[in-house]
Image (tube, rainbow, N blue to C red; front, side, top):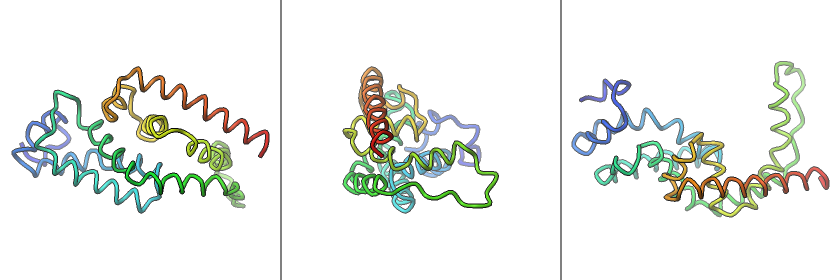
Length: 190
């Protein structure tokens, strides 16, 4: 098996082979880097996302021999590593969200008639959403961001964080309620 057939090889086959053939790990990187980067970029600034995404794969590469495909697939394993690395930057992340919450919405650029209404609405909601995310406990924020930015299923989030799918559901439910409350308060008082 070579990295040239990366598209035809499943993650399970990669995991079975990359401990013996480190070159196969390039397929893992090529297949999952973008998703990990986008997830981290949604939580931190672009430069930190680049660094954390790279560090995620360095960590995974160094731990590839201990990866157990019986416990789950590569994607949640990588997201779990990324989430743990983001946790190391938690204070920076919280400062980032507090700073975003103090910003007002940016004025709409003139002459961009192709701008989609939902994009403008999302831009205007950014400070309220950032403030709301900053109020969530770490576990709830991790679940929300893994679902929203990482596009992981409940089972994948559970695997990434080492919790049960039921816990994922309850954390997500509590987080949604808190996010709605904070955003609603901002709309009334803001």
